[in-house]
Image (cartoon, rainbow, N blue to C red; front, side):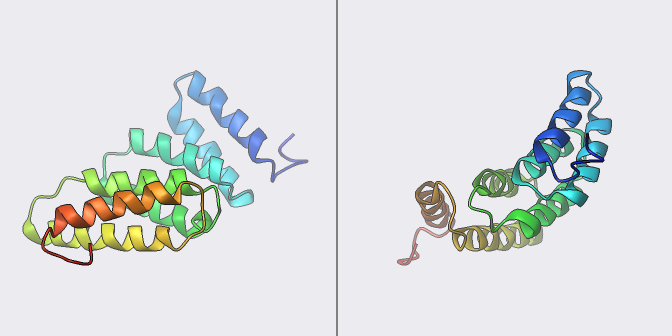
Length: 144
């Protein structure tokens, strides 16, 4: 089926889900990686990221995967779930030094700014989340 219709995101997702149902996530990730070469669809990226985050232990690799995703599909009107997952990942990422904390704050602010430029679903919620985060980061900032 996928040889005839290589850009059918629905069928790629169904194929990957057969491996997920058998608890074979590495194989599901491999299928999704192949799918994304033919069909950079939001739902495929979301499925890939969900499974990749569950099995990857390296926050740097997870961050790179999210960056790749938002580069590929971040302008899609339906990309809000990927942006939300990425922002939540950045918010909860563990840091060990003040330097890392500063770098991660910069990365998070940049992710918010990039996401807020995209006309997508649930923009109001994202704006509210960003404003709350800015107030928490710098309560004395009158522009937050």
